[in-house]
Length: 245
Image (cartoon, rainbow, N blue to C red; front, side, top):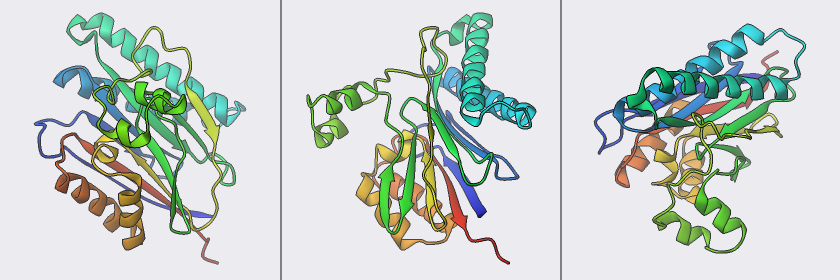
């Protein structure tokens, strides 16, 4: 299986700065999207620290015997610890935190994903879009127990309230899961600047219309901006293709 990948980040139309961060391993081994919060400097710093720490941790531990799920989980704990340390050194950034979503292809046939917060992973297969990650938000929990509908959640005043993020002493769990993928699939990692503006069916339409990764990514960002572009928008796409013999 061969991977193609691309990624773009856009500040959107309202915000002066970009608190999102993303990283694509040049060898296509792993992919990261982070969405920082907590004031301008804080949000930017938190997403940057998390992205850097996870990247460095994965690279330096890549060849260890550690199972991939454990490796991923430890990388996220390391990022959480680094943000907490930075908060202590810079009290003005004490409230900063970040979401994170990471996809790792350590052995090609069994990729894994880890996430905290509401940055998402989607899988696009045979023209159908499936949301792989479950948001760690107040509204996602409310939908699950039937208090509100998904439609109500889109405009709910609490929709931005995270139940979990990196950069918190009380973070007790990061979600790690194996991914079901096959040749022909496309994976989309994104910050909520995309999903706030575009419902899942709009995202699916974009991916149907643009088979080329770069065009699909840029069209998603443009579509989010056409809907208002209220937040930073980050998109990383990975397509799984046949190895050319």
